[in-house]
Length: 212
View (cartoon, helix red, strand yellow):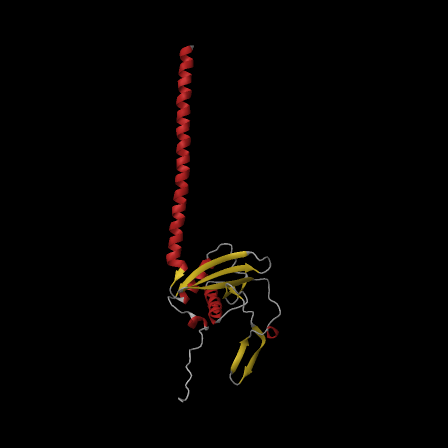
């Protein structure tokens, strides 16, 4: 009887050691999986940073933004989409020619990717004068007073040393929910970017006076 108890005790001891080792191995595997996931995530992040997010031309930067927004599976490309001008990050009611160019270019990029773009700036009639014919307008009284339930593409830009950081998002205009987002950095390498934004200070002048 005592021999059986001894054998059982030894069996329990071995089982306990085995269970402890197995539990330890599971903890190690779990931690290893976490490390591998973080490593893979950083690899993807670094690839995105080097090949998608950072661009050396404005055209590639805009294309990157459109591509990033397109791959988001939450986005219904059949729903009408309105694109607005990109604005300064620190002043949401201020834009520039740069911001307007980005907005206009996003219309082209998203349209080519199958989005259902809506041009809300169309007048109720085509206006004509001696210099040309016009349909688009930014005067509220000349365009439609409302548009259908849509997605709205908004964007901001922030001027940094030698680069411009652009952020874009697609927002549901009813709920305010962010449907998709994108970020890209335009590296222009200019010491002074005022020529891009049209806000260079006037050239210094020297007065010319008659010598006394």
